[in-house]
Amino acid sequence: MSADEMNLNTRATVDLNADIGEGFGRYRIEGDEALLRMISSANIACGFHAGDANTMAETVLRCRDAGVAVGAHPGFPDLLGFGRRRMEVAPAEVANMVVYQMGALDGFARVAGVRLHHVKLHGALYNMAATDPELADAVAQAVLTYDPLLPLVASGGSCMDEAARRVGLTVVREVFADRAYRPDGTLVDRGTPGAVLTDANAAAARIARLIRDGRIVAQDGTLLNLTAESICVHGDNEAALAMVAAIRRELAAAGITVRAYDPGTQPS
Picture 1 (cartoon, rainbow, N blue to C red):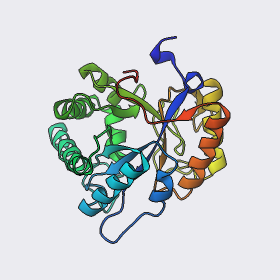
Picture 2 (tube, one colour; picture 1 turned 180 degrees about the horizontal axis):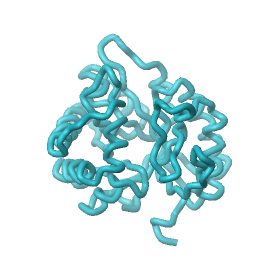
Picture 3 (cartoon, one colour; picture 1 turned 90 degrees about the vertical axis):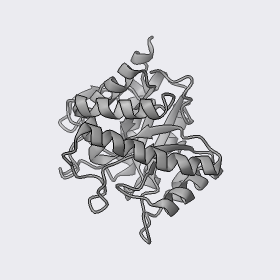
């Protein structure tokens, strides 16, 4: 079986990631510390959609102490919209935004004595780069130029996945436990009813099916074949802690260990 054909049910280990450090100033999202005890890698806001210098520094240190891999989570400069509103921005400008944010978090990682482990886009930027080849190419080149050894976390088969592979980056394909999918494998818009799952048992059941037969049910009932090297739960989801705990139980029952992916051995 080739690497591209491997599904979660064939893997001995899988990464479990969450978006954290998404407060700023006096605003904090509760639950980050508890999540760090259950996840293997973190996507840390880099100051554009959320986060600030103090929050980044504190979050990196907490990840280091918890043994959780530190990843950069670049998004659009949209604090009011939490980076979830689409912006019409030239690809070259997006590339500069990504480099700026990677560099900011990398600085705090260096001070804390840890290496930046991966990059994962946030919100609207993630969704736009998944379907826009030009935007995806710009992001891939930005990551490659900054550090060609940095893995990029993306949805399998997306434009971002394809662009990163073309330039030689390692791609870690992820599945969202708490988001609904369209039949084409893209995420349902957050404004659509049912787009965000808040039932921990329902999220765990989706992962159980993924473990069993490598499929997730799209919103219209279509069965999607998905490859998962990482599973994501959004840290700002009200049920994030319960979801991660339930997912870990399903993984343990299947004999799958939660572990941050090794950039030297992951398929690309």
